[in-house]
Length: 341
Image 1 (cartoon, rainbow, N blue to C red):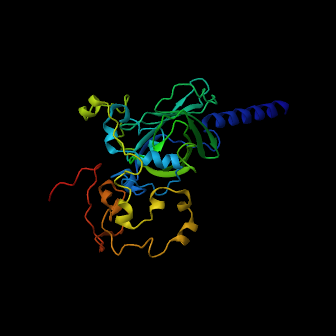
Image 2 (image 1 turned 180 degrees about the vertical axis):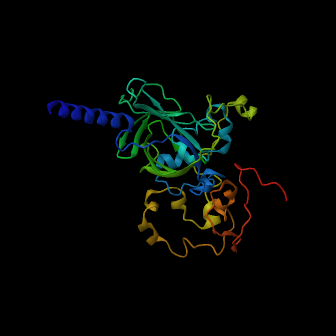
Image 3 (image 1 turned 90 degrees about the vertical axis):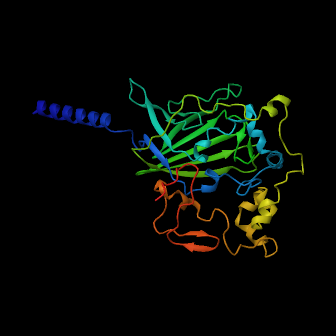
């Protein structure tokens, strides 16, 4: 009788240990795979890019506003400025898909790091899961930054430091080397959502929160590059004379463009923090803001990306104020046009 009880206990213990070994850690989620970008979120920002002097939705400090207004697009031709855009958080700003894979401890079998691919221009982001501390502030700042992570339930939470000075938008809104990024990575079935909270004590009065979504695609051919973003001389005259293109204070020629085009108040365009809150609407009136009677630009939005399989069924495309239920895609720089019929 005693022998039978011992055998039963032993069998139960072995079964429990086997189940624990075969099962993933509680509440952790498998993020491995190729993820295709869903372009319906902030399509203009990810595709054509922000308009000049469009700081709407941002809470800039006076220093951040002054820095952005001094920006000239010709700066991007300078060798030392060509890769400055590709900070770690560009993973959710760019239009590309991503590939995520895990690296494990060969002895313990636990995940030591999650890797987010470099795509075309961006460096690989490594999220260390082994509890290592962040290095000294004086340590080298790579383009990938330094990121540690942990699981909170089924959400991967990460924190990035050692981020190079860069941009928040392609129109010159800058981020300093004091910037930190907090990540929340969610998986819901075949969909992945990443939220990044950017904190910058130099150029942001309040954190900037951005989310993006991807769809799992086993057939996605997402490139990972060993040497992302290689600068080349585009305007030799700029390099030869040592000039940094810029606008002097009060001399930016594009500061009124969105006000004239869309009648958006200047304080909203220039990224004042108060314009982010619902109370700001109470200050608007017919003289300061009025909706347009028809759409003239980017009217079809992400419907133009229909060839990528991301358009919503039945979504109408609006051009010049006219509804077009079966709109023809307008074209997209990231998708080849369909062949002529």
